[in-house]
Figure 1 (cartoon, rainbow, N blue to C red):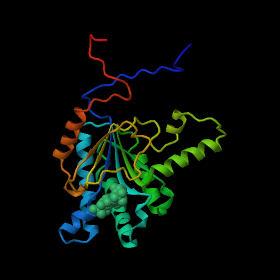
Figure 2 (figure 1 turned 90 degrees about the vertical axis):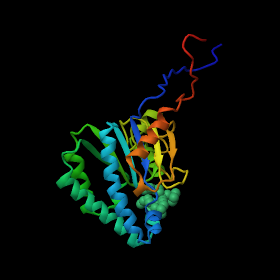
Figure 3 (figure 1 turned 60 degrees about the vertical axis):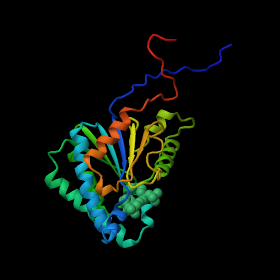
Figure 4 (figure 1 turned 45 degrees about the vertical axis):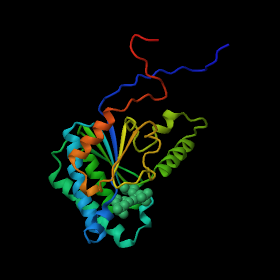
Length: 246
Ligand code: IPE
Ligand code: IPE
Ligand code: MG
């Protein structure tokens, strides 16, 4: 009698570079507070650092990166803070149009963009279209929440008449459809939680937490996270067999 219905084989690769890195950019508010500045100053500096670190990941030729910029829960913040963040987003989109076009980054805005103004939505669409031919992918998570992403995927599958959905079906209805799973999640700011970020996609991600506040995160800190990653033994539920032994 067969004990197993299906057999899967994975080939864990220790020491490899991550194909997909997720970054939870946390700590802007505390960075500002430490300096006696308003929180918006932290967001401004955080946005500058996002550009620096995104460029560094491109230099390292990381194929996919996902930056968490604004969660579905961040609307709970005071209106002036939300407005400040939105205006930084508009600045970034305009800046991308004028200055960053030459960068080899294909941008995707992941999250429910219907909550944004028509101006922001059309800028997002334009940036996506103009960057569509670039090679390396950068997802910017805005009004993003993993739970609402999963519910959206289920509703789409239901409305297509599906009655029996597979993992692949679900993956294909996420904002990250077609992209590899996340290998490494980096969270700055000291908290050790995912805060509704890529819950499905990071099922087997390595998790790296640092106390560094996001505006202070440097290239060297990324190198440290990559060194941490390179030392992980990724098993994906299997066991690593030493060569020649059984
Ligand atoms: C992350 O920094 C940026 C967003 C969530 C928009 P925070 O604003 O959460 O900074 P802290 O955690 O209050 O320091
Ligand atoms: C997570 O940070 C969201 C982003 C970085 C965009 P939060 O500051 O919102 O998370 P919590 O509230 O500490 O969990
Ligand atoms: Mg925070």
